[in-house]
Length: 223
Image 1 (cartoon, rainbow, N blue to C red):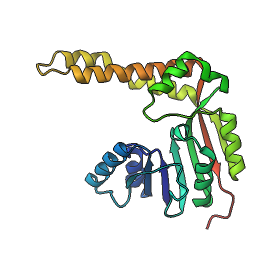
Image 2: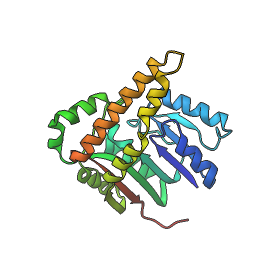
Image 3: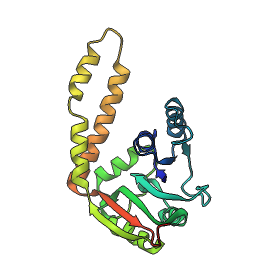
Image 4: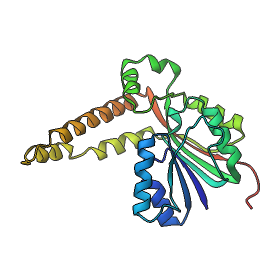
């Protein structure tokens, strides 16, 4: 099967899909730097043809060069301002009977944008975000013609993943500080990243921002 991965980052999941399941992947990433580095990783893995990573502009109506069987968006829609145009573009390029899996950050409500912690987090995002309530995203998907097979909150799963991901970071920092070579730059980067994710976890626990999963289906006979 062919799969479009929206928000591919460095392309790790794309290469896993290509290697483990034999899928043909095209990874789309907004950040030029991440896309270029991701493509280098695909080339090194010998997957430049089966799992290429390329930079894309979500506002461009001619993003996709071909149709695909599946699409996957991993925390990528919340950085897109014109979400409906991108969702419609994906719908039109998704084959009949195809599925579009979405995991994304959504707002509890528009009023959540007034929260100081939410404002601070949004200012720290590397790509300017445009989060919307999950009900609004649901409506946009339905208006584009998708049928929703899964529509559920998975915030607790993300909070747990964040917690587990940072376990033992204090020992890593301690080890780095004891090395003869100056690792202060690395330590400062780690601390900054830890603070960012701690703030994100705090906001998720306050339920100002949620994580939502949709499995959207394009009606039609599977060929």
